[in-house]
Image: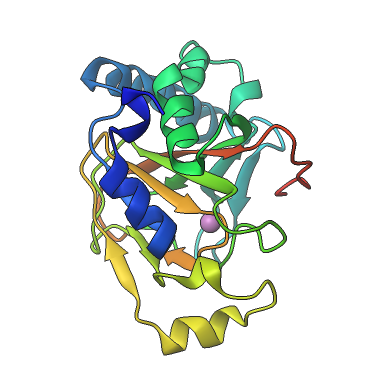
Length: 224
Ligand code: NI
């Protein structure tokens, strides 16, 4: 193990035992600023020109004509200037440190909480068919998040529960922890973690890039 593998050892321990941990300032201010520019550009294609493609996931509210944008899927395949930053070595190295061996990115998306209209993301697991500690999601926060604008919520240690654990029962039993973050923070969570996130009644976007990393030897089903 080299020096870089022990840089976040306390966070890695927390990730292994609870299924989730937060790391500060992984990418640096300039990179976050560039990614935000990209997010503004991508969101603009939706808000100004309507739905860009089927990768732009929306839902309809009864009270509104305009659908609510909540996710841009296949983010690495969209045509945007800052796309290459998704492959920043700092992110792959961080994920490898948490998983404990080399990893490759297996899914990219930006999750969007539109001001005032975003609703809760229901309790779920991203995957329940992979062993604990083998596949993780990095959430790169382009905006600060707390309980007021829908930060991540999760049940610590739920990644260790059986594949067929009842998500609603797990959430009711709890305890439920909230994970407030600053702009530029990265939250690493095991894809098996039982988690959710709140609505965004505030007046500003809450934007998070999500990248899934896995052992290249694993063959994963699509998350769609
Ligand atoms: Ni999720």
